[in-house]
View 1 (tube, rainbow, N blue to C red):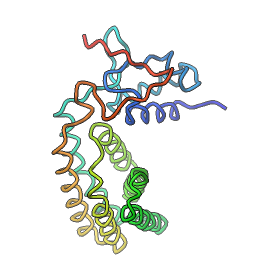
View 2: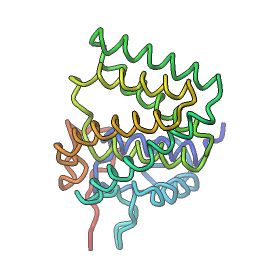
View 3: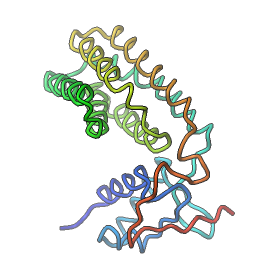
View 4: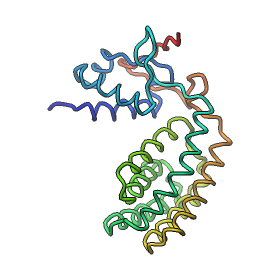
Amino acid sequence: MRISAHMVCSAVRDDIVSGVFPPGARLTEELLARRYGVSRVPVREALRTLESEGFVVSRRHAGACVAQPTEQEAADLLDIRALLEPLGTARAARRRTEAQLRVLRGLVRLGLQRAESGRLSDLGALEDWYHETLARASGSPSLAALLTQLRRKINWVYAAEPPLRAVAVWREHGAVVDAVARGDAERARALASEHVERSVAVRREQRPVAARDGRRRGPVRRTKHTVNAPCDNS
């Protein structure tokens, strides 16, 4: 079975976001091809895509490396989220399908159950699924892609939000979905804006993890194919 550049791109992106490849680490085509069991061609294509997304940079004399966003760049991501997420939510209220609404309601129900029972390890995946479904419900593929990419980058740059807000977050999601279900675009926009403001306030109290001179939260998982050599910034 041929592994596509898209699949390789997703795998490398996931490893960057999770900290397998920390900020500043070199990403050589040879070792990435060996790690994912592919030729260098899809790796090369994947690295070009990740560079366009801002996860990877090309350094002179060093090749491709994991990007090291500045604290200003990290702060900009939060500002962009505050602008785009309410817009996407308002459009979802006008354009969502019944199937998308059922998924959103089911995710809110599961998220609340997990949060109230303290099963917090499940919430990250449910959050991603919720936000990606809500973004797709906007009916705008371009906006949905921007919102999904933005969320990935924020999850990479910042540590996870404190779990103390988990129940409140899912109740806020529930209120947003209720407004979307009623087709009330202005109410959906307002609730999404309030939710983002609370989330952004929490994030702004944190120093961006991926901007701390290449240090990540927790230990970096090491594998025999992980590249730990730093990039040459010259």
